[in-house]
Length: 482
Ligand code: C5P
Ligand code: C5P
Ligand code: C5P
Ligand code: ZN
Image (tube, rainbow, N blue to C red):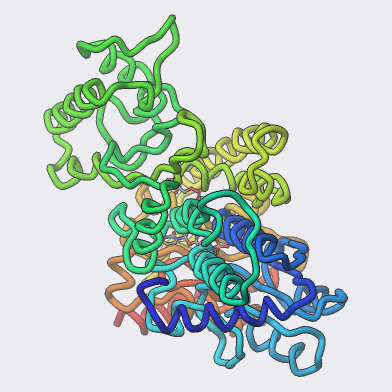
């Protein structure tokens, strides 16, 4: 199977445990990675003939775990969360409420359990080398393998026999969790890309690094690109149009602008070269200009010109559903509903885009407060707690926000609780930053709880304790970076 035998060993043990279950309750996280994790695991369980019911949770806390324990299921599979809450889960296991199987990539709590698949347990980075969907994919591969070894048959079409056709969803999950390092998937993620390519469901190519190559009309593709700022084009509708009109290629079709995918290779080459020339002439540093081109992952079985074809666009489409209490819609899309679910997801996407852009504008105009080692803003009710982390990540890099200092964002959850999201950079992590520890320790110091990854983490704290939380976080970051 995969490149890491010890991880495969864990996957096999989990798969065997699942094969022994009469039915499985699957609980997963409400973001792109959690949705793809659930879709991969649900598909693999169904193909193996194991009945499964799927539920989604905003976060896994004591109350949510108790509600899972109250269900009649003996076996509960947690995907894209569970490791960080292992202490609570293990208590239920000891009480005989259910037996847990976990496929996750978050920092594990310091408790051991038998069926636990997590890259961090084998020295693999859970923020850049394997996502929740990747862990679920390894589990799916093992489920097919153990089914075959049992002499059982696996339902599904060609390519489905070994579950390698699920590699596309695994890549969407990894990209959705921003696991690409310098634009490229590495480590165990890379092995999944290779399996997907062999199975014919994935292609990796070097292409323009902008978001929206499948669906955005060319002027919007260039105008909205935030990856590399190009004076006279970025955030400049007129500029983007006049740049395109000045090229010796017909970029319109019947009055409408074409999209990047509609262009031939030669036409793409012409536009890309002109973009590079324009950027250099406008003084964009060569190092930045290099970033105009990057690695793109396409799902080859999906129709060209749709969000589903591009891993990055697909993941945003999924976030637009699950983070707005419509995980059912996103799961439907992942499971192949190309009618009702896709229509609804596109509708939700418009709303999500608007919220992200309004959220970012708000941070720009309101600005951030600085302490010695962190910066923070309080969005109150103005940004949904389920997307405030995405906005915080996008804010690192806008004017008025230090791109090289951890950012902490608060949003109101309810009268009693405040949601906290924190984001850092690879460079800071290289210097010792671990936001997972910062969020866990600082939140516990004020009566809350949290966790996550070194580069991105979150917490819930009692309302009113935000300032104390910032002080605690500042001290911990000082320690880590000092
Ligand atoms: O839910 P959790 O693992 O699944 O989500 C990871 C979060 O961390 C995402 O919101 C992603 O955007 C963020 N992240 C980041 N920078 C990275 C890696 C992840 O902001 N380098
Ligand atoms: O929503 P999601 O977490 O998938 O967004 C990941 C990244 O994709 C964002 O940080 C942003 O840079 C980019 N994005 C974008 N335009 C959108 C949505 C997302 O450029 N409408
Ligand atoms: O919610 P947010 O996008 O800020 O989450 C960033 C990361 O921290 C995600 O991987 C999420 O699962 C994790 N997290 C956590 N415990 C919390 C909140 C977030 O482990 N209470
Ligand atoms: Zn994840």
